Amino acid sequence: MVEILKGNLAQLSLIDILRMLSFGNRTGRLDIHQGAKSGEIYLQRGGLVHAVTGAKIGETAVYTLMGWLEGDFSFTPNIDAPEESIHITTEQILLEASRQAEQWEDIKEVISSTDAVFNISPSGSTNTVSLKPIEWQVLAQVNGQRSVIEIAEILDLHEFEVAKIVFSLTTAGLLHEVVDAIMMNREMVDEAFFEQLTSMFIEVMGPLGSMIIEDEIRLIGEEKGTFPQNKAAELVERISLEIRDSAKRAQFQKQMVAILRG
Amino acid sequence: MKQGLAEINELVGVWGSLLCNNQGGLIDSAPPPEFNQAALENIARHSVELLSTGGESVQGLKEVVMHFQEKRLFILDMQQAVLVVLCNPSIDISLLRLTINIITSRWEEDSKVQKLLSKNYLERL
Image (tube, rainbow over all chains, first blue to last red; front, top):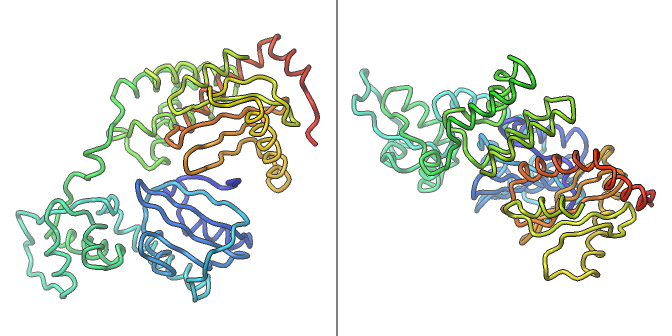
């Protein structure tokens, strides 16, 4: 299986990937992984024919996958779909996905990811708030432990719908985000790593080095203060590609690999 | 060369590695103990075939990572030869790439390695 397109959703959104593959009339399977979750989208000569993630299938699966703000993807060409579960045109799907993507941009300002956990705000809202039944249902599930995606699963709702509701309840002052459950459990790189990385990189690239590092951290979809250990090598690899001199690049990589391998 | 392959093998998640010429002939290897010569030659031949086939449809294809349920196969086209690394699915591919780049850069400066690669060089079929 030759993967011809690989990357992270933090750098290239799913809608852009699908547009590219559709425009190129590609046939094959797009695999998406986000932690323990995964999804597959099949294309046949540029048209979306089948999608699946967890128990979701067809258009619903595509829209669910569109909601993943981060994760790895890879496209393997020339794989036929095992079945056809998408019965609307690719243009319709991409149009609806674009609409959702625009809303996601606003939602992302408040909800860092669908794994984010919210709790009832102790101060509450200062204004009178009227809630629709569906908003009550979501609010009733918020307990400071359940993530957005878990609430969607409990209520059997699309995570995009739940995220939209959580977004509106948060902006109304009823909810606030608690520490991300994934962030709490993941191993992070320490400050000394960034000090060594920055100092060695600046030695090669000059003062622009620290800006390049900041840019790459952002492109990976992470923040310096909470940068995960399992992406440290990826960061080193990416920034080292900025060093044009191959001997200097290898020297920098050698020093950083020694640090990464402890 | 053997030392370079051994260094690759030291990385967590690496199971074994080998270097073959552009027609799949083994040049050197640091394989897992359970692998015999025939198994290594089979992997080498398939890896070269994969690079050749992929290269026809994807211009500039230099690296292929094959995902299997139990293992991963990292194949690097070094132009003069092909490096194949057998890994566990948990392998940190970025760390592997960095390690390989350090070693292949060192090989480029090593006259003994260059001599060996030139001796074994064959055009890809």
